[in-house]
Image 1 (cartoon, rainbow, N blue to C red):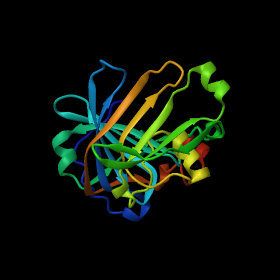
Image 2: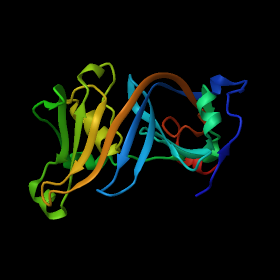
Image 3: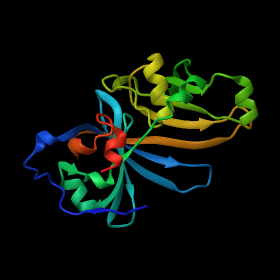
Image 4: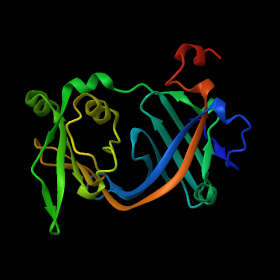
Length: 232
């Protein structure tokens, strides 16, 4: 993997009209833990509350730098590295075309999964929405020991479209649109076959922000011909 450290990344471009702009109005901070005993990873997700088709995931690379993983489910993906100090003070980020790659979602997988709304969950006397993404074949679930993805949703965050990290979940949401809006305060993967928890993600902070990310329209895989870009 090519590693790219962004230096000064306030946008000085004289041709903003030639760039695609992604707007972020919220940051969601989660503690992520894999199976029991695994170390906890702090994740910063920058989101657009009115457009859940893209997100920026930020995690620590080392004591001085962040790893930025930008994903637009419509076709654009990039991984870059930059200093923590620069990231927090910057309002805008520009990613050069050579670090933008074509992302193809697992849209076909959505036919194998369904969202199911469960009864509300109560935690510390607070009621939350609760839904799961699960295989629509019990036989397949048992045979492959597939886990269910559980989402516990803050009822006071209905202003935010469903925050779905995985592309299969996003593609299924586009088809069904049957789950409530809102930000997960807790997300976990659990198997009803072997009763194991495979991942837990807990919300520890949510704040409004104003950040932007720019890419050139010349390498916008969501809008122009993929073959033409790859042959440049």
